[in-house]
Length: 462
Image 1 (cartoon, rainbow, N blue to C red):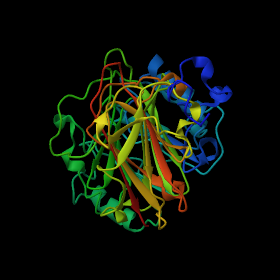
Image 2: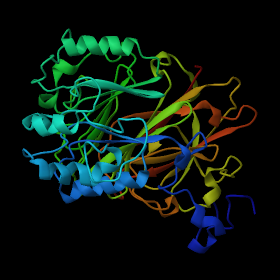
Image 3: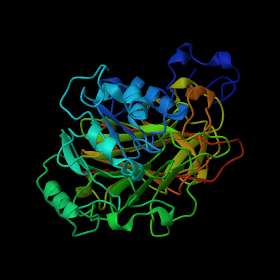
């Protein structure tokens, strides 16, 4: 029997036809990017609006602890409701003492390493109780309100976006001028800016227009904000903006859409019983930095990888998969080897690269070998809710997929979706002497959801 073709056709008729290695079928808990194993990668966590001390904030802390990050970054509102010294320990030291120091949380165990390992931004609720905040974080660099920390290959610039900031928040202010000089002196490839009030989000009345500094011109990799009690990601002028205020405070929806933002938007918030409390896990690959957002019910809502010095890459790439590329697709259970290059898909349906995105649909696209080496690939997909993607049998991208084996066709976590989403991949996943195959599985929030599915892949030299 040819690989991938049963006696009854391309679909498996019974579950017992699945190969004996089904337990090793790619699952939502095992991911790679360019072949690197996640457990061996340096990582850090990002949390925001978590200082409530409620059960959700403890679940977020429990999840972050399971990742074993080297350090933790916050987007503000580190505690709420004018805490006294006892609530300070309950909300900060009890869940997060491992990354703090003895002077901040006495009587607890602490990690060793180059401090600080807990890097907070100030939120508006932190300003309501400034005395315990500044006492707790008196060891932070500079004045503790805004500062920078190098964690090579990442350089963090933690700013204060609150209107009460003594040194101002507008372009031309003392804080802004310090930031410009600090960025100019940095030689780290990843430059990440962190502050509380969003510079961009899809709720216009919550945007802090004072903080719309020239991040693109300065080569900033990503801007991390909080304040909105949920999660979303936006891309504008080559800079990624991520709003992460899902650390424990009451989730609130993102209402409205900012028409000035013309690229992808991923929403995550409470919808149809879905709980968005969660945190970001950030993995540092050899040539990429990968931002994942996980909910406390172990759902990977979002994932995007950004290349080294990515602003220099934007422009015309070399098309590898375009709108006129032929695709094969199938909507049933198939052998677990369906993502391999030599899998026989000749009995699958044939279509152009523009088809309905049915839940569980599997898509294979064969394209020519790369005649020249690309440092990076830019993958863009118009899709419904969630997706899993492989190139040459390597899992390279996944977002908005509930936990479980992919063989069981897990649903998407949320039904919120943008028109297009994109990520960057390491160019080494391509073969230079044989056919390449991109494989994709569609995950929708519910059966019956469908829409246009389209895939674009471009190669970029460094």
